[in-house]
Image 1 (cartoon, rainbow, N blue to C red):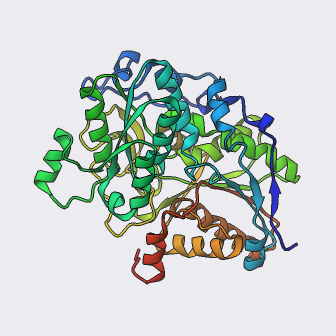
Image 2 (cartoon, rainbow, N blue to C red):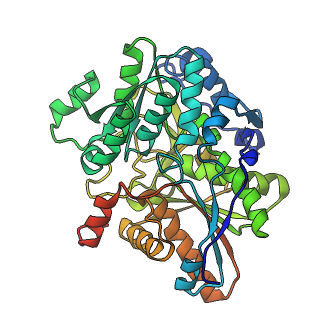
Length: 434
């Protein structure tokens, strides 16, 4: 076999509901706590920054939540996304394993983030919100929300981590093309940003800082709500369209994965591909190994502590029970692979605590080596973030070669790397280190 095999679903197979993993947990999650009182947050606490309809989703334990028709209509621009078997990569690795990838790079933004951006823009629109404020790291989330806001007639303000603002100018231009206003964070637009810059004018920024600025913007600007691209339950919920489609497509392929792999920064990519397979393990007694892959330089799941922590640097968010490196964690400036957040989604953290998922950390040189091998065999230049998943998929395929095991591997390719070429340039020039 010398060519890729593509498994496509018709538009009629776009999922009609999102899957809520909270309904099937063998042990309930610890509730988020109010930053002031340290008591479990109420609906009223959360609606200070989110519309009530999304807060209801955040707190819901209903198993299946219906996807509104206007959201499915936008999804139809790119969903269902294809599942492909990476035959050329298999051949290059001389492995008996079958490697499949779910390709989320076929939408206008080129990442998985629009799955929740479109949903959040829709729910804010029907709630009467006029403007959304958010943060972004590498820019995948900011550009996704900018596009979604344009589709639903909302203003969009983005605080982009300064080091990424400088390293990835084309993602900033994408956001601006879709009508968003973008500032490097820390910025001079908020009290918190000005305070940070006064202490360190060269501060590279972090997602925690950018979140603090976006939340300050939200509470001080009329008709504005906050939108988050990862971590929270409703965000992970919206991404489960990925895994639901993948389960149907694996059935078309006549196989079922032994290993499912997703990259993990805040957790939404991993949740999207992984949560529906976790459900099959819990409900149908499947034994699939489900692996979250994070960067060694921001390794919350493998090096962090499971405890309550703030989601932002200024300590304004609710406290969440999660694996964390500390809300004041600053990624190293040399880190170019994305996935920079200090904490992990509470739902992903809970699954890790219960032993229902595994976690692996990869150094960035290995990640870029894997991304280049994938590009040279499969033709797609992957974003650095999903290249973490590729690295572990390759490891699993090599293990299969060494043992002769005919393993089935599935990973989520959440985006293309066409706007990440400066990072590849740095790697190819020998300027990236671990």
